[in-house]
Amino acid sequence: MDTLIIFLGWIGLFSTLALPAIGSTLGCTRAGQAAIGAMLEVNGGYGRFVGVSAMPSSQTIYGVVMMMVLKGNGVSVERSPGLFAVGIAAGIAMMMSAIMQGECAASAINVSKSKPEVFGVSVAPAAIVEGFAIFVLVFTLVLAKNIG
Image (tube, rainbow, N blue to C red; front, side, top):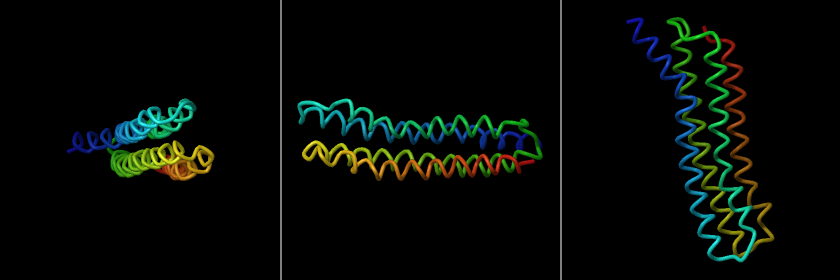
């Protein structure tokens, strides 16, 4: 039974990286597809499209930080339930944040190809979604101190 509990702890720990990486992949893909399409329709400003399409990658970076901090004192029978619960919840939140940020970035790219003057303000929703990812990161770091 202890082996199963420790295994679940490792799953939770790895979920803090794996799930955000899946979300970042999906989010960057969606925004990247919009960027490529926009490049066919405009005569410049390609760099901003590529830059915005990379925004969802930050959740994977946050996932690395969360995984390192949560691993802190190792994986034990006492810590595994907390690692599992926090890891899965934080991983899912980060994954969804990255996917939705990709959607926001794609929308910003699509609108700015026909109306370039709104590019800055159109990126604001993607930045707001980033804020939720930072909340998840901060709360995970706070909870990490209380696990086991």
